[in-house]
Image (cartoon, rainbow, N blue to C red; front, side, top):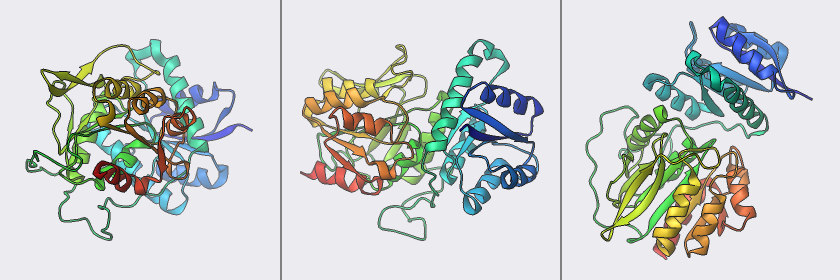
Length: 360
């Protein structure tokens, strides 16, 4: 049976293009196309689609407001279609927080030669959305506190005072390496909300376009106790700081003159990704060895599995998110299947387990 898709976009051209792309896949069928939220709502009732593609910006009720109501009244898998702009990036991150499964940028006229690749990526995301676990989101709070934003966090988008940089922290000498993909933006946020300001350095690869990673880092920095930055390369790796790989480059760790530093690379994609989790994890195994701690969270595909295996073989502690709490149990499953994961746990327990391992 084909996966039934409803396309929601205010542009007739975009509705036609997305419909043509999705219908070209043998297992997908666009059952309707709506120009606005009101029509989409009626179509959902009558057509009962499996997956929705949703434009971020629409006249009348915009995509975010519609998504929020949809996830409250009739939760279903939603793939956001967003423009690759700063405003589009920030809006898309809010959509993921509200429960959208994933996002994809809008196809552009100047990338005609990659339309086939775009259609393949769009189809893959819709397929994954159909089988994914729809998760309702709660407002961000730190572990142990509920019903209100803790006083030591800030609203996303606010101007943040510079955070102190502790000279030593929990598990001094250790470094945390984390990889994620689909569902990872919210999973990473939940993990970091349980991490103290004086944490060991944390290096993160989240599969994400380059126009999104700076906004993602700023959003995490506004909510979490550690300082979160988009890595620019050549930074000295310091405790209390989280380094997010930029969407255009692989992130690695290197040792120069006895000092650990970040390093960016424009080498070809690995596992179809740049940045790739395997590149980060391989550098952790080579440079940090048993002083490293690896974490693999929700995501499609197998990126990170072999790199994490090398980390474990080098003596690092390794953790994988369990199936029950993953949006997509792809990357953690692959890592588990090759023997790379030492300990599996629920996302809600991950920070506590990691801190306990660091303390030991």
